[in-house]
Image 1: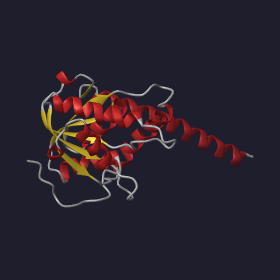
Image 2 (image 1 turned 180 degrees about the vertical axis):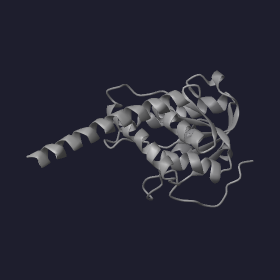
Image 3 (image 1 turned 90 degrees about the vertical axis):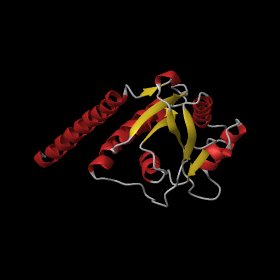
Image 4 (image 1 turned 60 degrees about the vertical axis):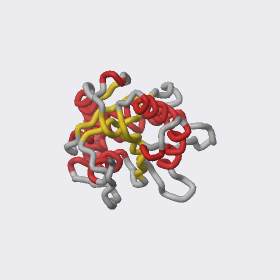
Length: 213
């Protein structure tokens, strides 16, 4: 019985530590990036490149994914406000039936943004990959990240730790009910940030350098 009690006590202690660390990770990222993310384009510096973080165009039920279209709206707004000259669309291209970068490119072109101003990163499998590849593959030391606020905070924090001067332009978010699962996953994704930084996790794929004029 004593052994069993000690095991239970150990698990409880680990659970408490896990909860504490999750809270600490989230607050640390929020505080560190508070001055670097905004919904107001006038508060952003002008940068050569905006990096749009990928997500699927449609949901599993076939409906439009609002996260996707809100990010496209934000990228269009920044480009037409001349806050950025070029756009990198970075996302998953895991099979021939699923291509986030091309979906984003096509939508931006439909909004009047020239194809020559859009660069595709097909290996943005994770936020870390997208951010680091913007520096290592596309040669950008500073840029504006375009996604929802919760996502931008994590991406900007990663960028800071990788020696990148990054800002976040917050796309419109979805309502709390619709975004509950996404926001819940974000809590744990922020814990993963510190694991990746501690162990020096790199993007899954490298590649040839891409020159943005």
